[in-house]
Amino acid sequence: MTWGEYKPAFESDGFVIVRRFLPPDELSELIANLDRYISEVVPTLPDSAAFYHDPTRPETLKQMNNMGGDEYFESYRRHPAWNALAETLVGEPVEARKPEWFNKPSGIEHPTPPHQDNYYFCLKPANVATLWLALDPVDEQNGCLRYVSGSHRGGVQDHNPSKVLGFSQGIENDRPEDQSREVPICLEPGDLVAHHGETIHRADTNRSANRQRRAFAMVFAGRSCRLDEVALERYQTALKRQHETMGLQT
Image (cartoon, rainbow, N blue to C red):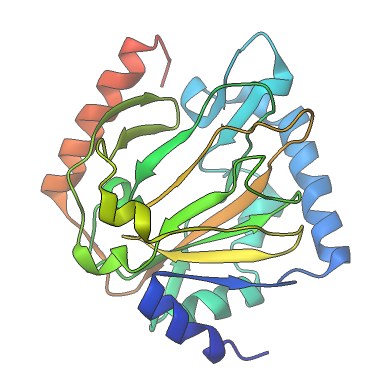
């Protein structure tokens, strides 16, 4: 499959939806391995690699970062469809970072603050895209992603401590012009949304009665990307301070 039809929207809006990106059999295999990883690997990880709303309640797992050290997910980083789509959108050869997993358990007040991924990545140039795959039906009730269309063209904005575990920094003030351009992204399992590293996005709390909002994501950086050392030091200092405040071991 060629992916060129998705590039114009990605460049103009900073995000693009790919419906039925993953076929049902591949989606089932991925979910089975995620369940295995959660039950077998997560208990061995440091606090900074798996975040819970309440560590005493396993069902409140909300985020897994840097899912490395596992044969299946190390191999998954080379998945041809994911890499081909990312390379088309970014416009150059790419390298996949370690996968991530996100959830918004129902009944927990925990919104995702407005932010830009490249504030965390600290890459120059910002030739980086996040590919976010829905594992459950995702809608406005259970906390869908919301993008500010075209915001990737404005550069990285100032971020401040958010006090949200997993998203240590956020854009503190939602500007009216951003709100007017915000687009909710509703997806079915197997649908994917890709966004530019500097697109502003957020998500509300899951207000459904008993539904999860699970997603699997991979970040793809272009070959030309280099670390901005000054930005990286600023971010790592803020992250360490947040983890210490929350009593997390790294």
